[in-house]
Amino acid sequence: MKSFLNDKLKWYSKNLNQYFLDTIYDTDKLMVDLPQDRWFKINPTRGMKKAICCYDLAGIDSKISDFLVNIYGETEYNRAVIDRKILRFSRRMVASGGGLYPNLIYILIKTNQVVNIYQFDPALCVLRLIEKCQAAESELEENACYFISTLYYFRNWLKYRYFGYRLMNVDAGYLLANFYLEVIKNGLNGEIYFSSELFKLARKYIKIDLKKESICFVVKVSDLNLLDSIKKLNKICKYQIFDDWDTQDIDLYETIEKTALGQKYNICEKIVDEGKINILNSQIVSQNRISPGGAAMQSILPIDKDGLLATLSDLDVFLKHVKYLVSDLNIYIYIKKIEGLEIGIYECFLGEGGKLKFIRPFNENLQIILKKHNFNFDDTPALIFVGSKSCFDFMKCKESEFKFIQLEVGFLSHLISVAAALNGCYTHPILGFDSKLCEEKIAKKHILNLIAFSDAKTLDRRRLMY
Image (cartoon, rainbow, N blue to C red; front, side, top):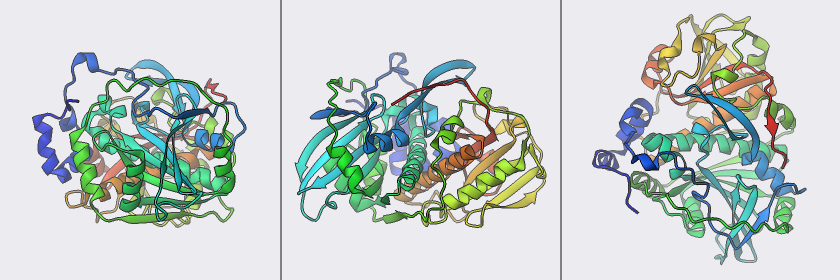
C-alpha cells in the first residue's frame, strides 16, 4: 500500500536524531495533511490478527482473564471533555494519548518444542490463538509465558501523525508499569526485557512487519497456575474478524526500528517484591481513575500535603528494586495549592523515601506551555514534571536509547498515577506542552512528561463487569 510519507519527512530517515528532538521540541513539523475521507476512520481491526481459535475471557473465573483485563482490559465507560466537546468512550487502567491505545499484547508459550502464539483483544475481551509452530530447543524457556507488547503505528497515526512515535513509546511505558504491578500483586516470578536478541526472536514468531508494527518490551512470567489457566480455556467465541482495511505503511518508523534492532542491548529488570508493596486494593485505584478526562473532571480545591507526600512515599516503595527503568530520570514538582507546603519548584529524590527538596520560589501561570488549553493550570494544586538527567543527549543517542528512555518516562509516570490513586488523588498525564518553554521555567533539563495532580472526586460511572 502507498505510504503517507511525503518528501518533507523523507529527510528525517537520514537524520533520525533531529527527528527525535523534534518529537519533543517542534511537533508542529511532524504534522502532514490527510485526505478528508481518511480522517478518523474507525477501524477496530487495526493490528488484530485472524485466529485458529478464539477464547472468550469475559465472565469467567480464570487467572489469565483477570491478569489481562486488570492490565489492559476495557474496564470503564465514561465521559471526557476534549476541545470543549463531551465524548463518551471506553477506558482502561492505563492512560493513552487520545484514548487510542496503540499497544498490542501477544503471548508466546513453548511446550514440548511447540510454540503457541496468542493475541489479546481488549475490545472484545477475547484471547486469540493465532498460530502454532515448531521451536528450536534453544529458543524460549519451556512453560514460561512471554508477554510481548508491540506498537501498532496506525492506531494513533491518524490523529498524531509523526509525533505519534514518541507518544506510542510513552504509552508502552504506562502499560509496562501495569504489567509490573500486576505481576507483583499476584506474587508471580517475572522479568522485564528490553533486548535486541529477544525482540528479533519474538518478531520471527509473530511475523511482525516493521512497516506497521514493532516490539517495545517483553515480560516473562514463570508460573504454572497462570500457564494452566491458559490451557484450560474452553469458552469458544465464534467472532469472525474483518480484514484490516485501512492500515498504511509508515516508512520512517520502519527505518527507526530496523536501525534499533541492529544495535546490541540487553536490559533485564527482575520484578522483585518483599511483601511491602500494598497494591491489592484495586478498587481504590479504579475509583480514583487514572486520567479522568481533562479539566472538567479535575478537582481544583487546595489539598492537604499528606496526599502528595504519601503518593511520593508509595512511589518510592514501588521503585525500591527497580534498577534500570528509571535510571535516566528526575522528578520536579511545581506546588501551587498544597496546604502546608510553600509555593514553588521542588525536586523529588527517587530512592530516598519520596524526599522533597525546595529549589526556589515560583508562582507563575503555566497556561502558556499548553498546546491545547483543556486544563486550567492556575487552579491545579500541583504539576509533576518527569525529566531526563542532564547527561542525556538526544542528538547523539542511539535509536534504541531513544525508545528506552520514552519507555522509562511512561513507566515512572504510571507508577506516579497508581500511587496517587491509592492516596485519594487524581493524575492526568499531558504530552501536549511546549517542552522548551517548560524547561526554561522549571528546570534546565529535558522535560518529557507533565502530570496534573489534584484531589480525587467521585464521578458517575458505568463499570464494565467482566
